[in-house]
Amino acid sequence: MTKQEFRAIRKELKLTQAEFGEALGLSHEMISMVERGVRNIRRPTELAIVGLLCQLRHGANGAMAAGTMHGGFDGPPDQWDFQPIE
Image (cartoon, rainbow, N blue to C red; front, side, top):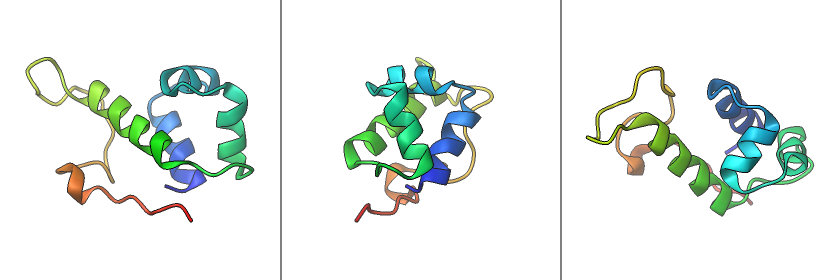
């Protein structure tokens, strides 16, 4: 996941850096550093984002929630387009 994708997800979710950080268990400073490219996005953070998106996308019955993410997260998880962090 690139810093641009990371920021685009936060913006799509309409969350501040502080709110996104709280949801992911990170400080708003860390969110800012990732978005600026000062720090890399670690795999556990990517997985936390996927978990957050899944919670927001699916209701209690597993149906797709209205107004959710589009693009790289459509389809089964094994088809999501994540790039490894080097």
